[in-house]
Image 1: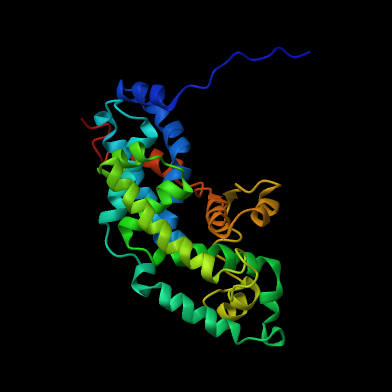
Image 2: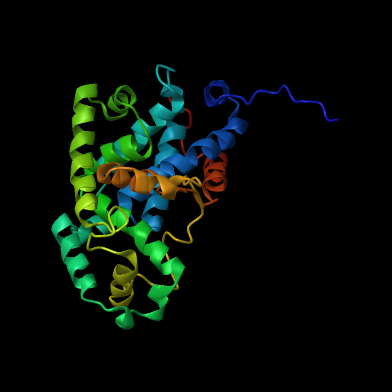
Length: 288
């Protein structure tokens, strides 16, 4: 019978302290532990995976360069979220934001999709993968309808589960101001889902199958180049989630639909690229 291991995983704060004392070998493990959350935040803010990858790279560089300024006054993850949030709030307008999406434009797309008959749908739109792409992309489209400040608070609070004190610390707000931003973003997005989404209420006008057909026809979705349905991820959905949707009221169903959005896995390029950066000597790392 194998012996039970008594080893305890080293905390990320311990790794940071080792890095600050000159152990650069632990930097790779630090990047490995934070990259998924940073990328997950970036892709929900920016929509386009390639843009999220670029932003993640820039954020990770900032984290490593300023690692020496981490004083341990909060969780390390909170400090990283703060750097990431500031970067995403102040960066230039991303490509997806130039689409100038609004909830009214989403309503128009739903109304246009409702004109489709099943016989009109492209065969690709009948495939489960295309429907899944539509369902996932829909959440990203709706996030883009929120102003940046509300979008970020909503992602942190509703998707990442950040509580008011930590969220306030991340965004440099009072807990009350953070809760207000979260509440405003939540009301706008969840109210839309309650009134429109067929997953929340089958009587609602928007159904993934018909909307998928429209998006394929208009080339908003390329069946050969899916952004989300084939993206590596860590599913949150458990075996009872779909059953629970039927037992909750509509607002709770809308919230669960958002929370069950998958956790995206960061592309496996950041550790190697950061290692190259560290080895290059181009930057003053671990700055104080």
